[in-house]
Image (cartoon, rainbow, N blue to C red):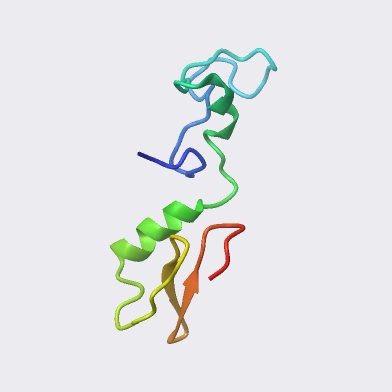
Amino acid sequence: MTSLQSGEHYAYDAFSVDQGFSINSAKTISMIEPQLDVLAGQRVSASYYDEVAMNQAYDCADGCTNNCKNDGYVRKVNGVCTCFCPPYLGT
């Protein structure tokens, strides 16, 4: 399973000859559920789950003992451990 809003996804017209230049640019990638096509390929920032993966890969919470709720993860900034939750959910 993957986050469709991950910065690691290509846009639905990523390999199209007229990518981004036409409202009718050819789809080269599609979701199983077509209504989700618009979610793929955002390049504004890392998604919440991209951040979780990077945090785990680099052991960013090493030494923290927080127990986060709501699928949150521990983020350590300037030596302070805090819970960071998905958008719209509290700690």
